[in-house]
Structure formats: structure tokens, C-alpha cells
Image (cartoon, rainbow, N blue to C red; front, side, top):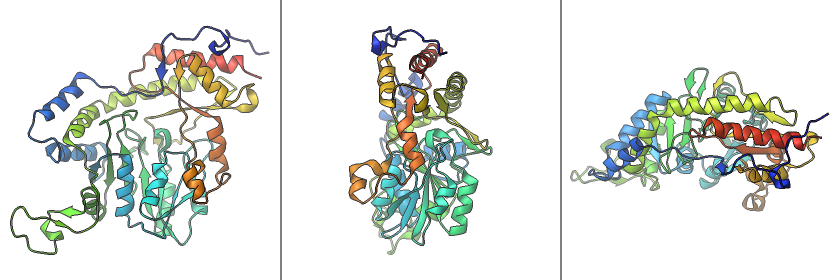
Length: 401
């Protein structure tokens, strides 16, 4: 027999809290503010010394040999595809439960996104499904570290080496995570990062590509900045003065400013405490929700020491009297403002017009119908965390079958 808790707020009961708590929020302290102010008072607002300093710091943190920072995570994916030599007629295998940029980056270079299904326990791309979707036209795999949990690096690298493919790790969620003791960013052929405000560390907007491959690195530098070089060994003509430069390829203006770089450098100092706090919150959520038969929690591979960017609550429909939309709205009435990450990319009208149909990744589609992203960020207090747990438990028990 289920013991009913107090009536949910959506049914006229009292909310668990008086103020709203949102699914994500940046944390900016005075040190961050001063770092930005210092750059604003300096000689360089962009293309200055903070860019090289930041790239060096990202290499130190991740163990990658090279880092190229850019304007955002989407730009990072775009230039990574260009550096990999992906072009019209090629295919790129990726997963659908991710932000659209993970597939759009293939379209940007004229390639075709091919969607592999997920592991329905970890929610990451399934290497077996990747292998099934490789054809003679496949050029690369874009594998997303969904929620911050590492992809199965070893299996995916083995597949890519066997098939002569490039492994691009979409690490928009992954900074702070380690795979078998190695920081993510130092393992795949290229790893892209995002520094949007809801990520673990932020530069406002910003991204990066990490690689150990010098040839990729040189291409990434070109594609970030119009295809222009000042390196004489890359030029076709002899320089006629110190001002001389050449455009040797078609690139983009995907540069990051020194203002953003300064903010991110300051944020990276706090990465250890940001990571620690996120792990604490995830552990509390897991402990509480694993006791609820109406809820499934995301499982992790033992190789991943995860700094979680998102916390996914997965409902078990057959054990509830309400659906995901009703549960989502009920949480909102309790002042727990959640989100859903993500709508399968090929559900969007643009992709439907390209010929993609629903039903191609059944595990990903089922996950989408059942998941909600709960609040998870560094500045959450213990009381905030307990309020989220109380709200979820309240609803799960009240609406239990």
C-alpha cells in the first residue's frame, strides 16, 4: 500500500518552497569580476595574451597537447569537422539525444548526419550501434559525453581505428571528468568544449578544441581566424614586411575575446570545487531517488569519474498515474523549475524535411519521453538540494500506481 504524502501544489497543496530554483545557473565571484575588469583596463580586449594563457591552462588541465579556443561550442564542432577533412558526400555518425549542434556540424561541411542509438542505462551513444551505422562513406564519429559522463572511449577509438575514422568527442558537458584516470580532452582525436553559463565553468559564451595531433592543430588555428596565417612556412609568397599575412584557406571569425578568456581562466581555478560540489549533489540525488520505484537513475560506466553537468530524472511510466508533462508541470508548481535535455535532433522540422523519420533510434526516443533535467549547479545549498528531493519524492509517491 502506498502512503500518500501531502497534496501536490498543482492540486491546491503547499509548494515545497516559496521561491523558484532553476535547473542551472552560473557562479560568478569577485575574483571573476576583477579578472574581467583587469582586461578591460588593459591594452588588449581581443587577440591578446589571455588567449594563449587560456589555451596553455586547458592543456594543463586536460593533458591535451594543443588547445584552440573559439567563440562557442558550436564553432568548435564546426572547425573540428573541417580539420578532420569531412566534406560533401561524407557521413558522420552521432547520437540524437544532444543539442542540435552535434549533428549540425556535419551539415555545415556538407556531410550527412547518421544517428546511432544510445545505451538505455548510461544514455551515452552505444558503440555497438555506432558500428552498425558505419558505411563506406563514414568519415567520423561525433560522440557526446552526455550529462558529463565519459563516452566509452576505448571501444569507440577501437572502432574508429579499425574503420579509419576520426573520433570527435563532443565534450560540451565533460570538463572535469576523467576516463580511466585520464582527463577527457586528451584521448579522442579531437575533443570540443563549451563554456556556456550553465556549464561547469563559463566564459559567458565560448568553446575550445583539444587535440594531440599537430596537423589538426594547425588547421584549427586557420579555420578559427578566416583561414589567415602569419606563419611564413605556410605562406605561398615571400613576406614584403612585418605587416604581411596571407589567407590560404576559407575560415571563419570564430575567435574568443580576451575578456571571455580572463573570465574562464578565473573560473578554471574553481573547477576542483565546482566538480566536488556537483558530485556531492548527484550522490544525494542518487541515494534518494534510487529508493523510489517510480524513478530510474542514470547508470555510469566504472571507467568514468564524472563531473556531471546535467542530472536526468527518468520516470517509469507504468508505475505512475501521470505522464512526463504532468510530472514536469507539478514540479514547476512546487517551484522546482526543470528542463528536458534533449529533444531528439531528427524530430525537428528541419531534419524531417531532410528525410529523417521518427523511429530510427527507439531507445533514445523512449528516454526522451520519460526524462526531466533537475536543478544541478555549484551554488545550490543543501536546503535547495533537499527541496528538490522532497518535491520529486512527494510527487512520485502521491501519483504512484
